[in-house]
Image (tube, rainbow, N blue to C red):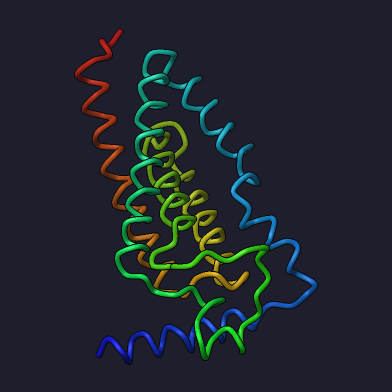
Length: 190
């Protein structure tokens, strides 16, 4: 059963990865670059600051830093634990895939880009939901695009992406709840 699932994952990866073309490669390389979305993060932080004020904002900065560290480190634990070769390093896959990324790590299960972007999307969307009801949908779409970019550039299988996004969503929700608890416990309401 697992072998069939992994085989389907490889086939789906090759199908999705080979949909790409040189015309779009630069765009997807920009999307997959971690630095590209610094302006988005800055806007989200600015909105949180404007809507909540300094003390709650500082508490959220701490929670966000711990959240990103948590998702990133747990991702590494899974990668080192499962040791699933990335598509760009896998026999029988790398010969048929389009490898667009500048480099390729050793292991890929599960995707750090997917987990981090989804955690940020869920956390930011939920924190700002009282002020911007539909923002969470925009952020979830953005996270999906970032996740897909990892397939496009040839460094992750679809299961890496799906599991990364699921873990990120769970982490984002968990840290959103932790933030709510910490805000009530340590930040007096005015």
